[in-house]
Image 1 (cartoon, one colour):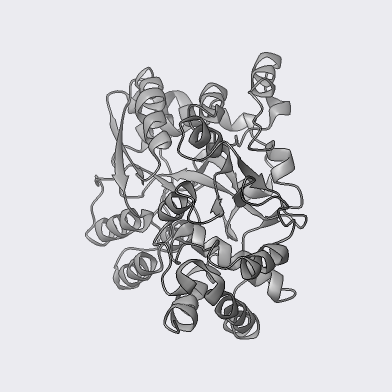
Image 2: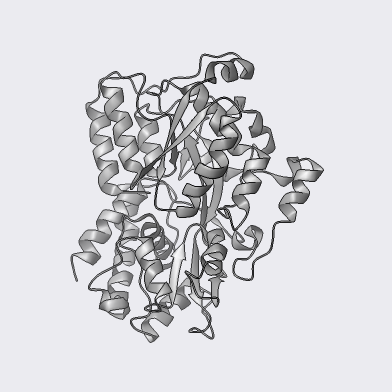
Length: 402
């Protein structure tokens, strides 16, 4: 979902655009007025199309539920969320107020780039009735890769970066990231990671950064980069000869890495959506001996969101769709492993007894531990500016050196 190239293009567009970067806000005075305005609108949801379970969930479960509210939800698949941001910024520059995009599945640098340029409708999420089921003090819902949310995007689900292994091939798995890197060196050719700017490859190198360099600040600066990044690239260059194909090439995205794992060419894969692993095993994509590797020191976690472009002419319908997506019924459906297996953003203590029981009754998985265990010792993501800087540094210092 994150792409340095796409983000750079978006920044260039925003720098050249004439419109003010001040974010617009809704005009309706009440939720009833929003629902009334939304009737008959068609909302185009632009989202990464590489997740088949997510696609089916939106088409077969979310869209029909939104239709019951008088709004048509149309999914538009994209290969990179940065493409949606670029389109919005181009429409904003052209003064378009009824653009092609009404809702975007977004987080990280794409959200930050758009917010800086006034690309998102803001100050609307507190009016969603479903927001009452979230914890107003949940840090993952207040800050998106270090960028304050400020009511410019509605939470959709949570994620936790996770390493995954085949216990039939790794009898005694390591329990720390340092141990994983040592194992990779001891078993050459059995480990690799996606090439940044792939979203998962990017988070993996940020995980390594926080292990090899002490006290990496969450906030990015040129000085912090110059102080901490060299240790990362030294570590990754030292690791490269022990990787799959001796580090001469890298999977271009996480799905290619998943295929290597499924084919038995490597013994580990990685994901920011571990709850989906149960279905991958159930449908035979991954071996039944697939297991999550929990690290003693924890990993980074985040949330993803739904944002409304400031160029949308269907903002009322988009808000209705976001409210439905956040409802207990939809969050429960989405959490079922056979549906999508995403971790809810709701605070279970704020739900009715029946809804809370339904979440607590979700089937346990022999593959994926509960979110509470996965997120133990979780750390927040580094500020979004770290992402393109490290991705480009990896390209210059690691990839170009092979």
